[in-house]
Amino acid sequence: MTTAADSLEFSLTERAAKRVAFLIEQEGQEGLMLRVAVSGGGCSGFQYGFSFDDTVNSDDRTFERDGVVTVVDETSLELLNGAQVDFVEDLGAASFQIKNPNATSSCGCGSSFAI
Image (cartoon, rainbow, N blue to C red):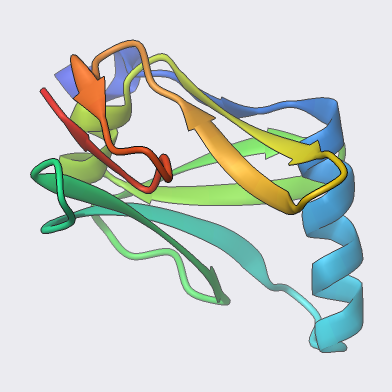
């Protein structure tokens, strides 16, 4: 049976996958995955959350890039459909950034957004 969530997409860039793989290696725990979630809050209405997890719940979708598994719950995925996580380094900082085609605006720091 195909559901609406089956057609939703989410991805990591090659740089993001390499950085996540490095961070997971630093954690020293087998089977960790990157969990990306959206919650209410932040200065623009919704905020992104990143964490490591070793569990896939019944309402999760998984996405794989270069051996790195990303887990996103179906509710968050509806707000992240088509989004891509990148890892950006410049002289001032290094951070994960989400390019979300569904966001109509975002705050200056890029950690929250509105739809």
